[in-house]
Length: 96
Image 1 (cartoon, rainbow, N blue to C red):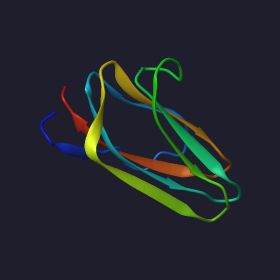
Image 2: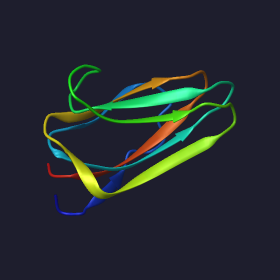
Image 3: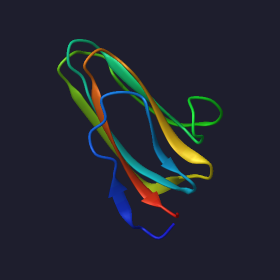
Image 4: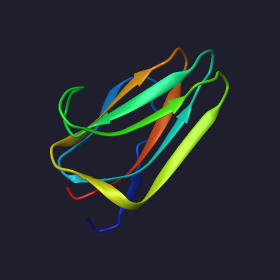
């Protein structure tokens, strides 16, 4: 990983964020009407190895985390979002 940090931009639904290898450097989750969770997979779909999860347990709240050392992924970066009106951002270090 070469520390070329890239933001995903705001996402309002589950999405394939990156195909290929890289490192998960950070997550931001913002809730609206209800609690929300994002689950991050090392895959191109919501299956396989979970490499991260972030939860906001109340409405109208934000939570973020930055990892000192990015969490490596090899297949892709897929984020599954639950929660009405919630949004998220992913910060990653793309190898490809």
